[in-house]
Image: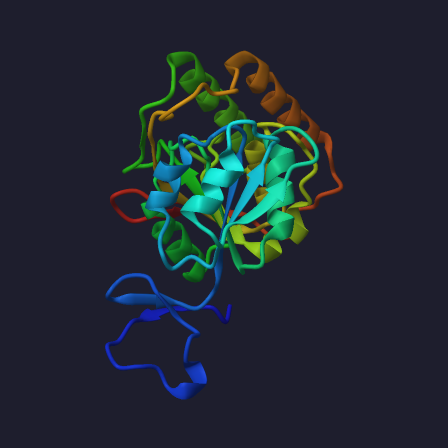
Length: 274
């Protein structure tokens, strides 16, 4: 890939490279523009917390509004005048994300929930994994260094069981399955062809990147409690939808594995490639 991670220096870049690199830290800068997609429905109270943690070096924020009635769009524009707002025409998280992806202009796309459960400061870890060679950076609450404050025992057991099924049926080595904090190169969308509308969209993505032979790297991530409001997630209902997607993808031969999938599980120590 032409996009690379390189040391940031104190002297200015040559005129031919002026403005090409975005400072990430005092030691690093990146070339690829990064788009952050945030699906939201009635999340006006949470957006100030979400936007506050987003890095200043990102290229754009794409807010997909699911017909909010609490002023979500107005709050977003007040917080970030350059926000790109996409009005969702359909229903469901999957539909919102697909609409947001279509509106992105960055080379890298990051998915962030609007409930305040994700820490935007972690985006640098996702982007670093991508510019270092991964195609898909998958957040994990259960990789070494990750965690969650917002998962009941039932959801934890369900996630573990479904994750085990995907690992066995598709040859992956995931530690987490149903988590919405992920990042990927935009060109991956041509390989995974998303076509679902609900919460099961993350599972579909995780399965199809494996089937497409894309290089996946897990990123330890901490999930915090929703700050305001009530989640639309229903453990049993959405768990059954996830299982349905797994079974459908197992019998669907239209998406062929083009290379042996490699999944890197990163924790405190060194990553492991399968």
